[in-house]
Length: 391
Image (cartoon, rainbow, N blue to C red):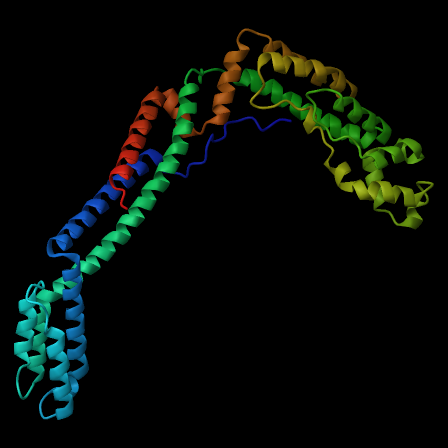
């Protein structure tokens, strides 16, 4: 029933993670990537996309021809290769006069418009084409910018999701800011821990020493109380314990019997087969029985609920535990009915729910400010996502 006393993180955050700062940075990166993409698009649109793509295609085509024929068409090489080169290259650089860098193609054509070609002529043609090569670079820059924009947009959307989750947590922190974190929780924690330890030990001894019938009767009674969540014995196991002499043995002993050989078991029970059928099949159930359902939760319940729970527990616990354990349980009930209990319980709840980072926000009085900052950041991220959306 209980959880270990002590604080646990209210939400998972890796060390050094700050969803608020990360979302702001992601939005800024998205804006930068979007602006860069628009700048490149503006350059392309200034020339006309089709004309830019045509210039880039012509540049690539001309370069492929230069690379393919250079070895065979220079000097006194293969005349047929020279003729083919001149024909194909003339076609490649024959571009419209209004194409961007059209003069570069004319200059490249002039560089190789000779009867005898050298490696220097091919180099001159490549150099002459360079102004047109800028449009290849421009299209590659556009593709890179699109990829960067898409990645930045995806990152911004994911950062917004993390920020949404963090905002939920910060709202909870702000709601918990009324907790008195200076409250002395040991006043509640120590008696609860002492009782829990005592009742676990008492049940363990009860399991080892009381008959299975007594243990099962105890579990049936416990199941009838609203605050004790026990697993009642399986029907066939309960029937075996009720109708066989072995039911007078403690459950721990029955588990030992289940490991005996048939010849050894015959010395202890009158029907070894029945014991194996009933006990061995339900070994896991028996092995899991412990005093945990009788313990108190941490953080503790509200005062009225805890007091009522202890009212139900006292007669049960009194059957298996000593007077000191019962007295400790009653002392917790008295505290639950006191005027200061709710302040202590609230502090325990907050310390249990929040991690150190969020507790520090409350201790330093910054919970509301941090929440407001996160809300502003979320608004900024959503604005940037809307303003940078593309069809």
